[in-house]
Length: 381
Image 1 (cartoon, one colour):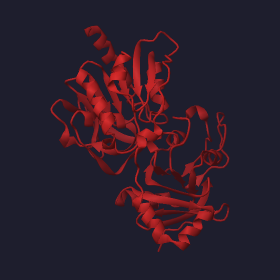
Image 2 (cartoon, helix red, strand yellow):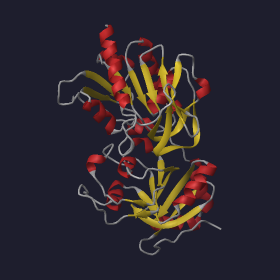
Image 3 (spheres, helix red, strand yellow):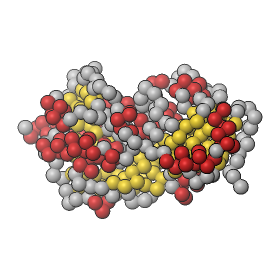
Image 4 (cartoon, one colour):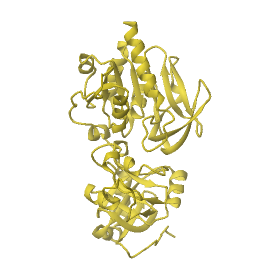
């Protein structure tokens, strides 16, 4: 028997979620109508749905919110992590039509429509999440409107199309095409930082500027030579989507930066993974990834546990770390690598998001660590 839920059925047109294993969930259409393909994942965040929708790291994915009510504080443009939504589809248990918030500028359903995001609500998201945890993330398709007819006419063909889907060239799709002018913080700038954009969340730049840094954002295909000519005080490797190992050319350029041996480098999420690959480590895909704002990570030096925000489907393999790469944070739940400090060069990275918003701010101090690294580098000259 197929998992079908008829929560508030009839208020809006029917929509279906089809997973690669043949499972079908029936619900109601939200956002735009049509059909969309993507990798179906879940995030456990209780807040921050706007940041999730506008986070470039979700490129190519159909995102499931495990928290049952979404949209209750509406749409607030100032909270976006980029100028548009990057998700391939959106799944919620219940969508709030009447948000209540003094900052609210719109409702979520209207936002999804204007962004062309096809969604589904009214399905049992707990059952879906359990299936993804047990089987692992899998491709899926949302059908609504006239596209629903395809399910009756050619289910076998749809399943083959779903199974064939693959996220490719993700960083290229989400990175800014051109670098931005240096803007600074509005105060006396302390350091010039290059933010290498692989799908950067806006809050990374905000955190750097908050600390007095002058930030220049450069696109993914900027070369090491071009970056070094800018004479930065430090380099920030941003978050981003997709398989880190796919980005061979970027990894080669990061390796060149590391070979200088003097420039401070700080990597977050995808930046963490690609820095590790540039330094001889290996990465592999997790069964269902880490997505949400409640992931405990332990500092291997102090033993203190921090609650972190995360969004990734790949991880650095702990057995692949060379002698000069020390694991600085470990995931308490599954013991995966959450941070690396390099002892031979001034570089460190973390898998989680210290700039998290919405989410825990426990590890915000890592930006201060990056500044201290740049200070020490200046003092040594």
